[in-house]
Length: 114
Length: 115
Image (cartoon, rainbow over all chains, first blue to last red; front, top):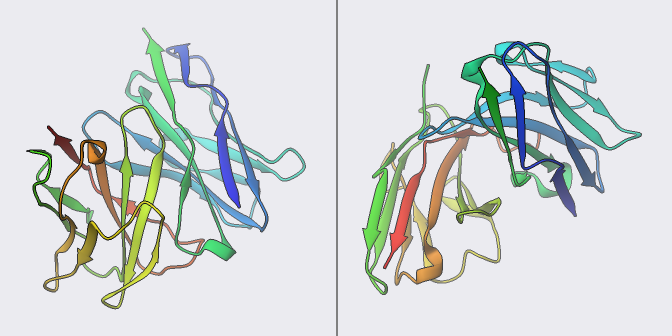
């Protein structure tokens, strides 16, 4: 079985300060891990993905995430938040034994304080 | 940049009615998916589709649901007799390949409201 836990349902940060969105996964097999972002009235957009290559993954808009197998974590970070980062963020896992099926976390709503 | 599109953006229907949600996947993609998100809950996998067949479906995807690729561009989800609990946001997605490492590209969703 596979599952994802997003530890915070809501995160607020001030503009220009670092962002940390936490994600822990559970998987019986080597996982692929994704972060998707959803802006209001928009589709789910891929930010970045990990597929067993480099453990530090860089994505779009300055986001990055580090795969830590020992901690079963895949936290999303950004050094300096921008107002346009306000959105819902989803951590997602898929594994070899469940080829096409994505398993989503519950999402973290990121609010940016001006 | 190519996008997955979905129509309508919002559908309101009466309980017991049939609805068809439409999606146009990215043109060179071969795998198609439907997910749904009930308000306040997780995004859940419904079904995957490849080569004109369902390749995997979840326990949610019962006999009330069906999918079809009626032509070379559209991918549809039909709910035969809607229930109140079918109210949700429905997302279509597509990918080039069906590997667990492959990226699924999502549409903006259709919000289905069953009254």
